[in-house]
Amino acid sequence: MLLAGVMIGYVVLPNFSTSGTTRITNVNEWISKNTAPVSVPVSVSVPADTNINMNANANANSNGNVNVNVNSPSGGIRRSLQDDNNEIDNDAAQKRVMEQYQILSSQSLPTATTPYILKTPKLPDSQRKKILVTGGAGFVGSHLVDKLMQEGHDVTVLDNFFTGQKKNIEHWMHHPNFSLMVHDVTEPITLEVDQIYHLACPASPPHYQYNPVKTIKTSTMGTINMLGLAKRVKARMLLTSTSEIYGDPKEHPQKETYWGNVNTVGPRSCYDEGKRVAETMMYSYKNQNNVEVRVARIFNTFGPRMHPNDGRVVSNFIIQALQNKPLTIYGDGMNTRSFQYVSDLVDGLHALMNGDYDMPVNLGNPEEFTVGDFANKIKTLTESESEIVYLEKSQDDPSQRKPAIEVAKEHIGWEPQVHVDDGLKSAIKYFQSVLDADGEIIPTGPGASKPKGGESGTVNAGASARIEE
Ligand code: NAD
Ligand code: UDP
Image (cartoon, rainbow, N blue to C red; front, side, top):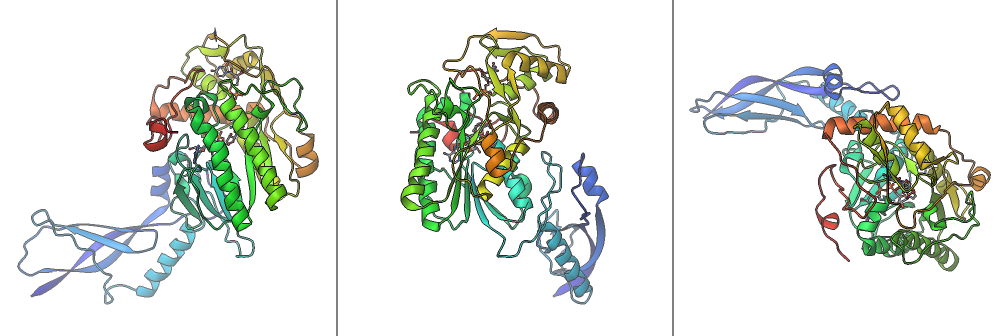
């Protein structure tokens, strides 16, 4: 015989604000202010002869299903209870569940690392594209994913987490328009897509030099695989090439017409030559197979979500300065770089992909600094007491770099909008938050170093944990 008893479960249903983008500084505080407890009477059936002390907790998941777990300390009884038709207003509950589902389907969840709600419109089928972003869990890729998701497209990230981090994309994980494929681009794959942004490739010198054979395979086999896919499904494909294809340039600033000055057998050649042949593949597939191609030659880019230990100059200097450790200059500091903020790059990639121009385009900020001046700028912006130390120059380090961006201005209507100082302030804030969360970081030096992909501070299993050919 069964007895029916009535119990109250507290179901926390989110009550999100839906206007504009909300900046959230404390996630827990935000959740407690923006959620309302709802008392839902439910019935529970237990065996008549069971003498138990019941604890109950209840929650609503994103599909709107209400689960109530009943635990008995003695027998460990756990039952998922159905709503009782006699006790609950089904229509009202259903309506509320649907409302919550609609909200969750149109925005990201705030997380510790992305404490914003990112809103996504519902696009009609005719406008919603299926977009593949290889390397989408990396620094640049994850910002591009944010833009594409916020436009309302279906976005698939393909990444092997060699240098990418799950936390860069975790705020989209629940969203019905978003998919993650943990996959290596050196392996073929079949998908239905309209556009491919092909970013997968380690970008920092210590990371791409750690396993040069893998870097070459990623640029060559990876790009061939993506071009094969683009050809099969008639997708437009954009390659993120690099200013490194100009090598140690004899022409300054570098125009797209400059053919470059690259050492084919130096430590940087796995990356430089890999990207050069990737560009060649793009135009071979265009000419032979009519694949629609776009090639962006990206100059040094920085911003939040750079891996804190990727060894690039911006992350190294900021992290060193914030910890009052010496800023390490490789060489005499007279070599130059030009730095662009990541949101400008993302806008440029988007404009290039969706415009008509199909020859290579430089994307970079022409504001040029010597590395020495840049070190001092970081010291000033962080109010750091760090000293500056001079270490041995890295082999084949390009002595100067500055983009000519007339092609981008003329053909895709793009030029950088963010001043370097403003971008640096937001990068500094980001790296301070990483230090607050992770504690001390000892920056990677100039030589080859093992990427620490996946979650920060841990070596990811698989590709990054061993050298594979
Ligand atoms: P990143 O290292 O943060 O991101 C690269 C992403 O590709 C990571 O998520 C990594 O896990 C993934 N990846 C690497 N090898 C892969 C493989 N074999 N299969 C699948 N995924 C793989 O680097 P980033 O700065 O975001 O650079 C993105 C792209 O932009 C790269 O192609 C890079 O060459 C190009 N680029 C960047 C810069 C810059 O300053 N950030 C400059 C020039 C070019
Ligand atoms: N660099 C430096 N100290 C560092 C890191 C980099 O002096 O701790 C120099 C590096 O030698 C190069 C420039 O800064 O001249 C940019 O290096 P980065 O690794 O960021 O990118 P690159 O443009 O060389 O690909």
